[in-house]
Each structure stands twice: as C-alpha cells, then as structure tokens.
Amino acid sequence: MQKASSKEAIDNLIDLDGTSLTPESIWLIVNSPKIKVTVRKNISQILAAHSFLCKSAEKKIIYGVNTGFGPMASRIISKEKLRELQKNLIRSHASGAGEPLREDFVLAAMIVRLNTLSKGVSGVSLALISHLISFINHRIIPVVPEHGAVGTSGDLVQLAHIALALIGEGEVFYKGKRLPTKKVLRQLNITPYTLQIKEGISLINGTAMMSGIASILLHDAEKISTASLQLGAFSLEIIGAYDDSIAKELHKLRPHAGQFSAAKSIREFLKDSKRLHCRYDSKSNNTDINSTTYALPRAIQDVYSFRCIPQIIGPLLETVVHARRVIAIEINSATDNPLIDIKKGKFLHGGNFHGDYIATIIDQLKIPLIKASLLSERRINYLLDEKINGSFPPFLNLNTPGLTLALQGLQFVATSTAAQNQTFAFPHSIHTISTNGSNQDVVSMGTDAALFLSKIIDNIYIIFAIELINLLQAFDITHDYKNFSTTAKVFYKKARMVSPQIKEDRSLTPDINSLIHLLKNNV
Image (cartoon, rainbow, N blue to C red; front, top):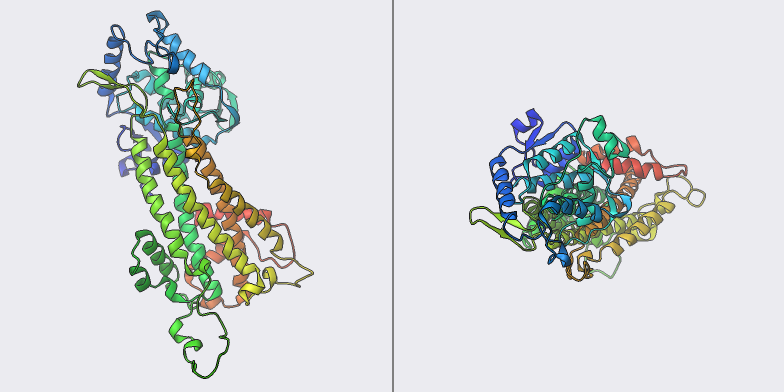
C-alpha cells in the first residue's frame, strides 16, 4: 500500500490538492482516526474561481446557479432566491431509502468530494471547504441511505444526504452513535453551514460516493488477491501437487503479467516445502510403459482448481492494477457541472459526473474476484469428497465417520455462498433506466454496482474462511508437519489459535467469523 509521505505521517496531516490523492491514502485516512486532512495548496485558485462565479452570476445565465435543474433548467431564478435554490436542491434530493451505508464508505466519499472541490474549478467558497474539512476531521459521518443513486449527474441522492448534514439537518454517526446532526454540531460548537450560490449542486454532482466506495473495496480486492494465492499454495502442499504447474519455465511460455506474478508468489510461499511432487522423480516415470496396460497409483496431472491457480488468479491481479489506475484518475477529477475555466473566462457544461468509468471497472473487478471464490469452492469440494481425492476421510473426519459429520454442514455454506456470488456477477452497469424526466436517459448505476461488489467481497471472505478450515483439518490428517513450508506452518499456527481442531462436532459459525477476521487483517 502506498503510504503518506514521511512528513504527513509524522504530522498526521494529509494535504489534499485535487491531483495527488490515491485510493491507498483514502483507506489510510478512513482507518486512522488520528489522521487529519487539510487544503492548503490551491487556496488562491479556490478563491479566484468563487469570485469569478459570483461576478458572472450577476450578468450571465449559468446552469444550476440562476436556473432550475435538469428538465427545469429553462426556469430562471431571481437573484434573491439563489441561495434558497441550493437549499431546496439538497432537501429535495436527500430522499434516500433503506439501511445506512457503512460509515467508512461515507467518509471516503466525503474525502473524495473535498479533494475534487479543492481543485478550484467548481466555484465553491473557501468557507464550504473549511466546513467539510471540519466534518471529516471530527469524523462526523452523515447517515446516508442505501438506495437512491443511479450514477449520472453523480450520486445525487446519497451525496445530498451528506450535504444535508453540512447544513445542520438530518442525522449523523458520531463516536459510534446515531444522532440528530444539530445535536452533534451544538456539542462541538459548529455552526450549520449556509449554502452560497452553486454550492448545493457542487456538493451533489459527481462520482464521489461510488469512487469513495471503490477506493475502500480496492484494498479488500488486494487482500483477497494475496489470500487467494496463499490459500492456493497451502492447498498444493496439502494434496502433494506436482510442482511443474507453478514452474517459472512454464509461465514464461505464456507471459501474462498477472499469471507470471501469481506463479512467482506461490513459488515464494513454497520455496522450502518438501510436500510437492517432482514429476521426474515420481515412480510413475520409472516404470516400464511397454509391459502392459495398468493404472498408475496417482493421476499424472492435478485437477484444474489446483493446477491452474496462476492462470485463474492472474487476471484478478491485472484487473486490480487497472482498477487502481482508473480510480486514482477519478478521485482526482472535477466531476460536477458546470465547471470553471478561469483562464478563458468561461463555464464548461458537460457530463463529467457520469459514472461509467467507475461502474465499468467495478463490474470488471467483480468477475475475477468471483472466479477466485469459485476456485476456492471447488478445492473445498475436492478435499471433502473422498471419492475424488482418494486420500482423506469423508468430510475430513477426524473421529468416527457416520457418527460424527465433521465438515459436512460447512460445505453447504460454501456452496450457497458461491451460488449467490454467481448471481451478483451480472454487470450492473448495463442496467440503465431512463429517469429525471428522461433527461438522464443513460445512467451508470455505479454506486449500486459498488455496493454489490461489497457483498461479493463479504461472500468471498466466507468461502475463503471455509477453505481455510478444510486446509487446517487436512493438515492435521497428513501427520507430516515437518515437510510443510514455513509459510504454511506459520499460517497454520495463526489459524489454529482462533479455530481449534474439529474432532467432536460443533457449530463452526464462530470459526468462520474468527478466520474472516484473520484473513482480513493478518494474511
């Protein structure tokens, strides 16, 4: 993960300038309460753009400043009603429904919005910038309902709930409690903000919600990538797989960057393992193949869920790299409308708020992530089915098969969770439905796509935890501790501390939850 600079790390202060924010920095700020944000580099640009806006509004018709919004853009608003217009925009659009979004998602969106406004091309005042900074640094998190974003003109409804809190209305989460915004602001002696011209639309136009969520989920995608390789390596040791499936020479002959990197990582995990089989040292290659037709003691190739791990996880590694690049561009972009070109003295009307870049990259991430979970589920099935593996007792039973059921019930959880992930794989970004009086006739659905990705990631951790329980149980059955790699031994010890050996049947729900925590934090 890219870290803040050494000075920022010492000061616990990150300066946002609209150009250099990274998904990693967003994750760091969100997960490190002591880190504060500021905007210092572009103050003159912010002031100049706001001044230009105010002067222009006195003599020009400017969309969203002295006109109505969307299909009502042809309605001119009188000068004395311009601030009321912005407040009405926020109140009318803060109409979401459903459960609140995760606090880290909302905080990430606030950071992205602050960063884009700090570019100094939106025309907002320095006072609004300072107010948003205050909310972020106090970790005042607006309550934002789940449903409402279609991802064109940005995440209007959900960002409106953030703006609603800035003006002292609605509810917020503060120090773990859900409270009326006014109560929290009184407690902190913060005055509710009064919106100036264009500031309502500048707050809610844009892709801050979907790209903020994507920044957080990218971190999970990276963790899952690592975990998938580590679980894959562990599984190869468990079954005593052939070593040529991860050989450097093999992968040089198909040099996709992700595949090559995946194989290299697995080799590194297994560098001191004595469990893998070298094909040309095996007995099957030292027999007379001309003598008769007979069955070998083991198959000469492993099934695909073991043999093809680099080829399946490789696309995930490459998609994560591409996603990081797309998200980084998005969170440093100006995405409201209209935007200001001070040098040329004009306003730029367009569609930078359209969310298809984020929606598309999220859908692209979903596929290889889900494939990683299906790969894991197939290895679970292999280890639990004695007819397939030919080496382990049914359902990895360490007691009396038939009387004790071991991991039989656990497989149902893996199967159903994998099936749900397959349903979520359908690209949500193609679910465009015309809305807003047919003004927004092609929409991105980027935020909902991101929320589906969040559910997919939760499901993947469940499946991975179940595979890890299988691997731990199989590890014990092998009675071959000394020949496993150092990586596997360390992994085993960590996991067994939170998930004891299963000999007598018990509920394994606590084990799943404990191993999910381990995979998220210690892999």
